Length: 312
Length: 274
Image (cartoon, rainbow over all chains, first blue to last red; front, side, top):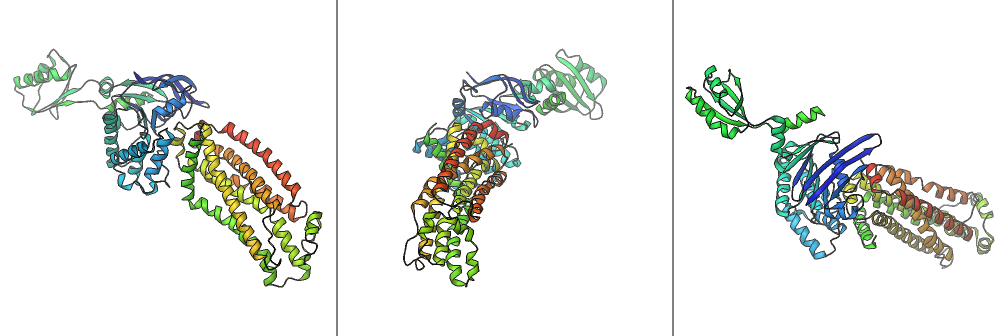
């Protein structure tokens, strides 16, 4: 079953179009990334899917509910970490979570208490549970905001830049938390980010969006391959000569060879680099080459991303 | 829409407000000034310093415009008793309209526009709470405390007046009287609701608490006009004025709430907060 399905979803603010005929599908249990620069339309997309803003055109279903006609059901099914994930600073962590648990319809006080204990333990905030949120660090506030987003155990989690503004250590912690949430509570996650590291690490599939429209969708690996080409085999030799290069080039599966004579380095391109690697090494050794190092060289998602963003 | 959900919003906001001295401060200080300082000034000053006879003729226009029944009430009193009686029971009454309007606009600004300022509004708007539940919860958190403050201020004012004027009036209890009870329990709720309604409209359209509070502060101006009109002898606190105030503010409540409800839309609120 599809957790999220959008068809030509569009949002205009006056003359400007923030989201332009965006269509995509997210499977149940999937971690799907919306990757794009600032102003690409990621936050507006999330807001439409959370029924905070209404679309100007197109349609979308979240957890099987129409975002326009069944907005209350959508809101009940969704947990959202907003772009500004501020909590009520004059309230404690427990008071914040209690309010949101009840606002999302959990009326059983015992269930609320158990869920809050479970989440504050998970996010390592239990010891500070009765302190005002104003005294928390930025990382702690972000953890509390994520706890708030899942306090009602939603089936779908919308996360808008969960690591934005955090230091590397806190970012790492939040990424680990999101991974654990995905595996422990089997949520469908829609993750908005402009951080490639987050997308690569957390997402099953990624959609790159720019100026409100979709550029490409696929797994991080597929995007790397599609935009940055296939993996390459990097072979560093003690010395390189023309015979060595020609012999490698003559191999059936090899598509191309680039040579850096100064560093005695060959960059071999092939459709299936894993299959061709032993033959390349064997051939080079056969020509008397001394192989110093062999690497499989992966093009980065960053290259793919930058390429697409450049195209606009 | 359920009252339970509206009360959930109310209790959350009330918890926040009572821990916020920026909001509680004016709520305590202004009523205290009105309830304690006004009666003490009018009762104690003439007894501490000797006032020349001509000074007592200053409010002569006001005294001339007193309704006949009030003139009859003060007929047998000496000049000091007349001054105290008329000021405390009649001229100071409109000041009690400032308390609910000030309290409700401060509370409503914090509750509506304050969420924008603190950037907590988006998470709140993402909950399944309906627009009606959010609006009602926030109206209640502005209305209930502002009425409690008004009633408390009236109680304190009555006590201060009765204690301070005890000797001057030979042990007579001056407050409460029916006119004041109508003012506190019929007029001030209507005034408070008007303040809230206007603040809701302002808060939806502005970006933050300060802007909302500054604009809402303008609500005190009509009340000040009322006070100065009374001091100038143009109008007089009495049954007719109370009836006009109730009618006027009820009509105003209906208009501003109708308008407030029509513009209280999630998307508009969020659009102005980003």
